[in-house]
Image 1 (cartoon, chains in turn orange, yellow):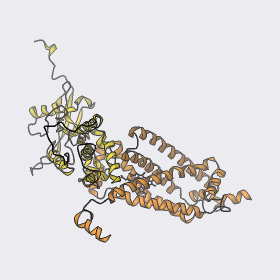
Image 2: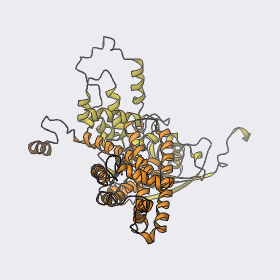
Image 3: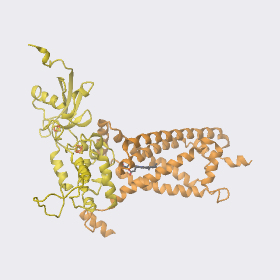
Length: 245
Length: 248
Ligand code: HEM
Ligand code: SF4
Ligand code: FES
């Protein structure tokens, strides 16, 4: 292994005197991890918006994820495990994708100046992609860490308390906008990059889907804020205890 | 004299061209924009406008043209921010009668609007070994091996590239990373990879473009496809090469 890298260091080729296959693997892995995260987000935002159907709907879904059909009363560790898996993919994706960030003042000023002159939609879209990606380093990490370490605090009241009384809403607001824009731009990039289907048509569809997800995300965040506000004096109290009382 | 058959050359609207002026080989030269105002004539292209400036206003202005018909690729320049062929651009397109002209970025700047695309294109051709690789001895007394007409069409489609350099000048990736081979280079490799006369394998092509200066450097910003004056299918050809190269 070490020998192999030394040969590459000195000759620019591997021991077969061929170009390294690693760049190909990284390119594919960047897309695969991105795709996994997009699929996850697609469902995650829908499930999270179940609050719009009422507290009972969201509560039932939470218990479902805690596998209450197997574990009596639900097992929050299931959520911890899921969050850990996503965190690993997330870190892997961020690690690989940072290769593409402008790496110096020179690169970034050249990009910005050129993009401003060119006034070209897809060139500007890439700026959204990297800036939202950069923001998610922080926003996504905080969120995923919370879900890993406090999986029992998910539910109509627990989540709303976090959003309102623990002041998580600014984080969620920024994360929501970042993740939806990043996922939209990312799916479009996947389609263009691998030549999956027609560019113009998929752009229209993705724009509509992005708007839809932003909308349900914002409305449900609003719902959590309202519930949290109404519940501020009973902070910490859980939904199911109230029901069974 | 009956004036009705001649065009009154003073009756067109006034247009203003703001042109980047700089001579890198003259230490006294300062980079700046200079404005030229002239009267528009019917069907005036930027080629005609620049020639008019050159012949009647400023004989020191440098710019390149050969074919004046969108075939040779030598007149590419940045027109109001967009890389385009000057000989195919009508001045009437610009409603506010103001046109800013700059040389193509990322190429070696000669002077004013003139850049050296030729030497870069030659180097690129060498780098991607832009010729048929075949062990077979060519016998010109015999008829060439048959090529399926659809494949031939596909190759001719990609051969329509005029090496104008617009795809590179429209590519922010290339603007950031000068070693990136760009759409013109990747398109060239795609052209040979579909050519049945060429015996090179995907492994061979990987040696030419299998890195972050080649196919994996492309970030799909699509400036190339959206500005190519020949409307080459650059996105689909780059995707095609990428799919091949990750399988190697
Ligand atoms: C810290 C978090 C993240 C960072 C730093 C990040 C960064 C990036 C960057 C810089 C790109 C552009 C790569 C390029 O131009 O080739 C990218 C692409 C992408 N991102 Fe992210 N991202 C993050 C999180 C996410 C998340 C949460 C999702 C899913 C919702 C996602 C989905 C995608 C997709 C699908 C692509 C396109 C993949 C490709 O071009 O191969 N990313 N990411
Ligand atoms: S691919 Fe298009 S833009 Fe690029 S050099 Fe060829 S003709 Fe010009
Ligand atoms: S002068 Fe030949 S393409 Fe414009």
